[in-house]
Every structure is written in structure tokens, then in C-alpha cells.
Amino acid sequence: MNDDHRLELFSQSALTPGQASRNFDPGRLTQARLRAGLTKRAVAEHLGVSPAAVGQYEAGITKPRPDLVSKLSELFGVPLRYFLPGRPKVNLDTSMAHFRSLRKTPLHLRTKAVAHVEELWEVVHALERRVHLPPVGLPGFASGELPSEVLPSDAIGAAKELRARWDLGTGPIPYLVRLLESQGIVIAFLPLNPREDACVDAFSVSHLQRPIIAMAAERTNDVHRYRFSAAHELGHLVLHGNVHPGDTQQEREANQFAAEFLTPSASITPRLPQRVDFAALAELQNEWGVSVKSLINRYRELGRISGATVSRNYQRWNNLHAQGAFGNDPVQNHPSEQPIMLQRAFDIATDHGLTMTDLADELALPPERIRSYLCVQDNRPRLTLLSNPHHEPEPLTDKSKAVPR
Image (tube, rainbow, N blue to C red; front, side):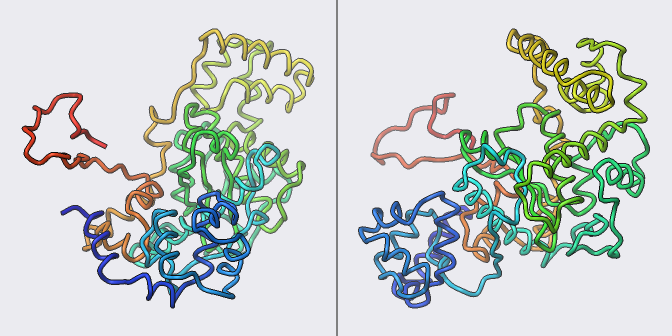
């Protein structure tokens, strides 16, 4: 019997809908609804009640009937125990997160993404009860483990100083995500759908005991843009940890930080060709791990060309890219740019007896959702029960129902 099935049987036998109803935690309903991206009206329609009734459930004024708790469990894909109080949790809102693409990210998607991070925090918290993760190495991080010394307040100065404190020298940073994880920053992919990923892109949260950078899983088709997004969010953590997000100036400062952090002006200036040369810039792209478009923008930042010239070269590059030239390099080709800290923490914990069943039971979450936060693939074969047990099974082929997940 696999872990998922054992958990399902335990949930059904150890807790009744009546018990879940009597001990219902209203905050868990809000968290589940926001994570699913549903309105109170949508939940009400599923339950067959009014939106006002759902509001009362979330406010703790009334409790849903046992049959409705079962429907909520089914709707959100969680066991009944999910709605019980007592498990550690945090409450975040969108004012605590800096979004890479704020202007094109609707409020309901920002709310959904932040609810994912609340859930991710619970996974991290459970692992940290068992495994020592790297200490947070961000100077000035409010909840960090370093003295309260801070970096310069200007973006370029902060990037230079952080490179110096992390002993990065003045050359390319080969493995950015590994570097950030080594400094205790949690980096995770959010299990959103492709349409949502296109809007969310990336965002960071600094109001927790450990900083988190959340990346859109579907936006990993270009490792150079992905690296810049991670450096951009690092800039927010460094510069704007205690600042209300949403200011376009903050986004410009985070971009300036990322550019200087990844391509220090003193090092990249003599390497840029006198004129914009896409072939030469493509070589620098591979060496420095930043996109050609980012390098074109460096010309402007360093006073080499005007904004209008940048726009014309962007257009030229986009046209060539659309014709198949200079294709994207996906993150999947770069294992060292993929998050691994939480996966390794889980592996260490499993060496000392933890199982996915244990963790899923403790968090009252489906194992597959935990795996997505850990960036752990489930390689077990997925089997399907034959509708007619007396039917002679077909030989296993590529079209068999027993295929790897």
C-alpha cells in the first residue's frame, strides 16, 4: 500500500466529519479558498449555501455542517484534518510581497500566490524542526541570524557590497540559485497553471523568519531571465524588506541591483563591444549568465547608448528570436540553477526516519503538493484498477495504463 493510500485511509478512519465540524478552524478555510483562487461565491455554489454563509464560516461566527466539511475537503483536495486547529501557520497578505510583474499580476492571483507561500512556510517549518538549514546570510535582514548591520541604501552600492561580503569577486556568478540557498534563502516553484505563471513570474517575501523567493514553474524556459528574476527579488530583500511594495521606483531599483550584482559595471564595461553586436553579446550571455537583452540595457545604464537605441535593438533581437535565432536555454539544462535545499533537507530527515506519509499527516496536506514545494519528483508507477477484474490484461506497452508519473 503506497504512502498516499495509507494517508487517505488514516484520514477517513481517525476523524469523522462531525468532529471536524465541531473543531473547525475558520482560518484554514480562508487559506484553502485563497490558495485555490476561489471567491466566496464559488465556494458557496459548491456547498449549496449562500456567500454570506461562507463569510460566516471564515469569520468564525458559525461552523459548517459535517456534510459541508466533507464537501470542502473534496473541493480543496485536502483531508478533513486540514480544517482542525493547532498546526503552526502564518498569515500573509499581498502587502508583504514584492512581485516581479506587479502591474500585470491581478490582485486575486497575488492573493493566491501568497497563500501558496503560507503553505510553503509550513513545509519549511516542519523541516526546520528536524534539520538545520543554512543561516540567513542577508545583512540587515530583520528576522535573520546576522548582526543588524545593513548594506548601502542605493541599489548599485548594495549590490557591490553584497558581492564583497559574500566573497564573489568581480566575475560571473556561475550558480546563482545554489548561492542564494547557501545563504539560507528559500527558493521554490509554485504549482500554478501556465496562465497564472505568466502573470506571477516571481516574487519575494521578507516578513518571515527566513526569506522566500517564489518562482513561477512555467517561466523556466529561459535560464537567463530566470536568473535575473532571482537577482531582482534578492534586490527587493536587500533594499525593500521593510517597505510597502508597489512603487515603480522599487522595481527600477531592484533591476539596477540585479544588473550590478550579476554583471558588475567595472567588469562588464570593458567586455561590451563598441557597437551592439548580437553574436558577441550571445557569447557574453553564456559567460555571465545574463540575457542579451539585459546586456543591451547595460549599454544604456553605462551611458553608452540612448533609450531609443535600446528599444531598436530590442526589436531587432525579438525579430531574430522569432525567426529561430538565439533560442532560449531552459533551466532544465542547468541542474545547479534548480532549487535543492528543501529536497536535501527532506532527504536528511528521511535518513532519520521521516516518511512522506509522516510529513503529509503532520501538515494535513496531500503528498503530491508537498513534493511540488520540495521540487521532488514522484517516480513511482501510476497504476489504474481494471474496471473488469476478470478481463485478461494486455501486455505492458508504451500505451499501457501503467506509466511512470
